[in-house]
Each structure stands twice: as C-alpha cells, then as structure tokens.
Length: 237
Image (cartoon, rainbow, N blue to C red; front, side, top):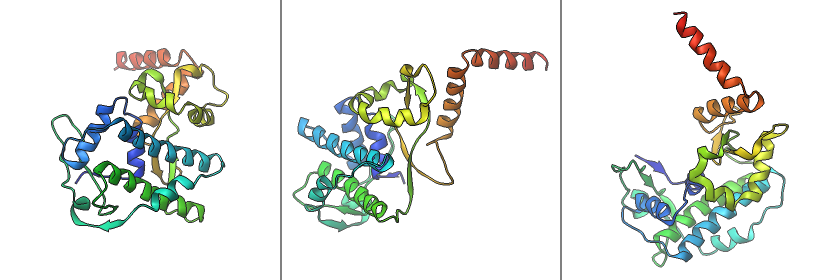
C-alpha cells in the first residue's frame, strides 16, 4: 500500500512543483497513466492549493475565513463509495522512486468529470470536513505547520512556492524567527502535518537541522567549535 491521497499530502507535494511536468508526474502515480495538463488545468490546481493555504493562514492567525469558494465547489460534487481507490487502478512505485498514491474509497466522482477534477474535489471535500469540524470546535485532529527553518539554498526545489505565497509566508516565517538576525537567507519549512503531543516539526530531520541552523545564526562560530570538539574527541580515542 502507498500513501492515501489527502489534503495535507496534496499541499506538501504541491509546494515542490516548479514545473508542469512535476504535477503531471504526481497525477501519473495516482491514475496509473500519463496525464497532460493544460494551462487551465494548472490554474485549477493552483486555485485549490491557494484556497486551502489562505484558509489555514486565517485559522492560525485569527483571520476571516472565506467559505464561498468551497461551498460553490461542494454544490457540484456527487459522492461515490467504491473499492480500489474510487475505481482507479493504483499506481506502483517505479525506478524513479515515485511513491504510490491512492485515492480514498469515498470520493466525489461523476462520469462527466476529468481525473484532475476528481482529484481536486477529493482534497477539497476532505478539507471541507476538517474546516467544518474546526469551525464547530470539534476538529478530530490538529494540523500544524512545521516550525523548522532552513537555508534558502536547501529549498531551491520550492522557489516558485515561496515566491507565489510570499505575503502569507512572511507571517509564518516571522512566527518562528522573532528576535533573530540574518533572516534573508532562511525560509520556514512549507509542510503541514498532523501533530500530537505538542509536536513542532514534521520530521526528525527538520528538527535536527533547524536546531543546528538556529545555533549557527545566533553564534557564527558554533559549527567550527562543534567540529573542533569532535576532532578532539576522535584524537583522544
């Protein structure tokens, strides 16, 4: 079994799509066949991603939610419960290391909609459930933004994402970099995750690398001193 497509997974993948071909590759692993995107298709993906990110921003920073776009989309959906990833043959991981993605069994689906529209409807439907439960004060899980910071050169595969969402990203970045200097060279990790027990990072790698970078920004000699202590321990063995 591979990853089940969910709105968080979609957002985390979408931030790495620098070119249309990368989005097409993601869709191919979901639908087991090549899918070519038109400019309008790309715009649809972009609108769905932007909508969810703006609502997450509003939730976190106590802004005003916009439900109109989601309500209009929900009005066109027809739910279908089906075995085998909503009737789509799941993809398998290939020699390029692409991860198998499967649609959930309960998805919005209709004969007159394209695979792309079904995929977008699926993540928006899931997001609507999360948003509604959150507005009711009964969200079944907590979604957090990773608090790791990283050098810009380490996230070059997300350059287009940070440019597109610069205004939103400034708020997220400021939240974890207050009273820090030399911030022009860093970004905040773009990933969201389901957090438990007060988790602040999407992965151990983010936690360790962010800690080292913070120390280095606060103390430029930190890395050199760390290496010196390591060499001293090695020579003393």
